[in-house]
Amino acid sequence: MRAGLLGIEHLERAEIEAILERAKAFQPAQNQPFVKLDTLRGRLIVNLFFEASTRTRTSFEIAAKRLGADAISITAAGSSLSKGESLVDTLNTLAAMRPDAIVMRHSASGAPHFLARHLPIPIINAGDGTHEHPTQALLDARTILDHRPTLEGLRVAIIGDIVHSRVARSNIFLLSKFGAEIVLCGPASLVPPELARIAPGVRITYDMREAIRGADVIMMLRVQLERQQEAAFPAGEYFQFYGLRLEHLELAKPDAIVMHPGPINRGREISSEVADSQRSVILNQVENGVAVRMAVLERILG
Ligand code: NCD
Image (cartoon, rainbow, N blue to C red; front, side, top):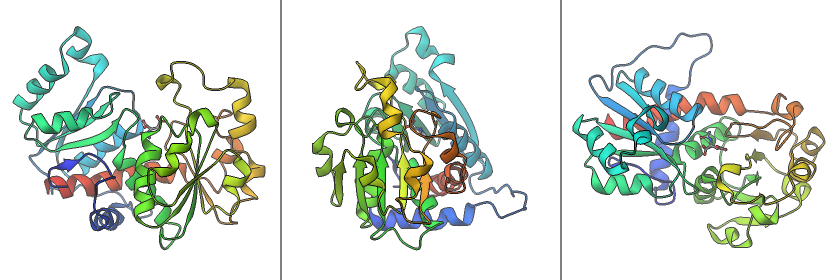
C-alpha cells in the first residue's frame, strides 16, 4: 500500500478495513464547514487522466487539497499526448517534476502497473481499462457500511455491463473478501458465465427480478458503449429487460439501497424515479469518494 494502490484483488482485508475506518473520520459533519488539514503540506500529487472523468478526478483533487497537498490535473486532450508524445515520454517528463504520487486513469488494463514498474513514485489506479478501479470499490464499501453494520452475508446485486466494468471487478473482489453474496445480472453478452469464477460467493442470473429478490444492495452499472466493438444487444430493449424501475424495488429488502458509480444514463439502465428516490445513495457515494480518497492519500503519503 505504501507503494501505491493498483487494485483490490491483492489488497489485504486489514488494509481495506483501515482505509474504510479512517475515511469515516473524513466524512463531512452535518452543517460544519470543512477544516483544511496540513497533513500533506508541501507534497505534490499529479492526476493524469487519459480517459474522461468527472467524479474521480475532481474528488482526488479535492481530497489532496483538503490534506494540504498541491494537486494538478493533466488530461489527455489538453496535453502533449494529443501531439503524439508516447506514454513513456510523458511519464518521464512528469517524473522529472518530482511529484510525490501519480493518480492515473487509462483505457488500457495494466497501464498503471506498467508505470509503477518504471517509476519510483507511488501510483494510484483511478481506473485501468476493464480491469480495476480500487478507490471506487472502497467508496462503495464505505457507503454500504453507512447503512449496514457489516458486509458479511449481505446480498449485493450488480446489474448491467459487468464484463467491461472495472467498477464491478473491484467491487466483486472487495465484497467477496468480506463474505458478501454477490449476484451478477445483465444480458448474456455482457455477463459471460466464467465471471462466476472470479471470486468466491459470486453467482450469475440473467433474470433481473431474481437478482433483486431479497437484495440489500442494488448496484447499477452503465453500459460501456465505448468499450464495445459492436452492439451487444438491441439498444431499445435494454431498459425493458435490465433497466431499474420503481416496481423492482418491492422485490428487494425493504431498506435496500440503490447505488451507481455514475455517470448515470437516465432511462437507459435506471429510471429517473429510482435515481431520485429515497433509496438512492448515488450522491452519498460521491461524497464518500472524497473521504475515501483522503484516507488513501494519507495512507500512501502521510
Ligand atoms: C466509472 C468508471 O469510469 O469506471 N465511473 C466512475 O469512476 N465513477 C463507471 C463508468 O464510467 O461507467
